[in-house]
Image (tube, rainbow, N blue to C red; front, side, top):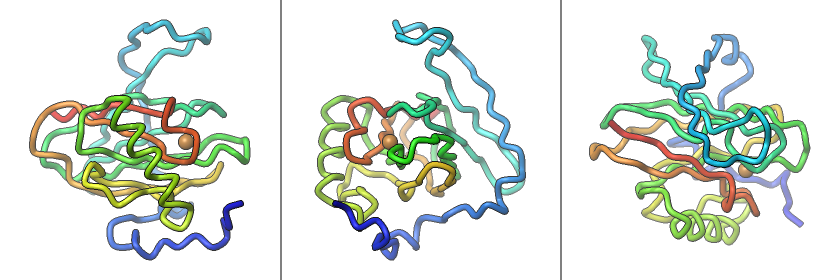
Length: 183
Ligand SMILES: [Cu+2]
C-alpha cells in the first residue's frame, strides 16, 4: 500500500547523491576476498567482501544484492578510519520486489541494533526511504529498485572497529546485513 511514486528525497539531498547511469562506465572492479565458511546453505556461495577502490576522486566501495535474495553479496568491507568514502550499491536483482538500500550504523553489528533500525525504518515509511531519524545511523543510500544504482558519501568513524550495515526495506533487516571494518 505504499505510494511509491510519491517518494520524497528532499531530506536526503544534502548528503546523498543518486548515481546517474552515466557514472556506471568506470568499471567497478570487485575482488572477492576471504570466504569464511559459515555453513551457508547454497553451493558455491560464501560470504564475500567488497574491496575499496582508491582513485583521484577518493575511495569507492561497491556492493550488490545476492541475486534475488534478501542478502548482500558483499557481507563485509574494510575502510580506513576518518576517511571520506563513496559507498555505491548496484541493485542487480531482477525481481521487482527486491528493492534495497544500505544503512550504515554507528554501532557494532548485532541482531538488536539491526532489529531496532529495521523496525524503525518500516515506521519511517517510503517517504523517508525507510530510514528512521536515529543516532545509530551513520549514513544511508536511498531505496533502489532492481536495475538502479544509488550511492552515499560519508566520512568513516574515527574509531577503528566493526560497524554494521543493513537494508531497511520492509522485511529485509533480519537477513540483509553486513559488517564495515574500520581500520
Ligand atoms: Cu533489501
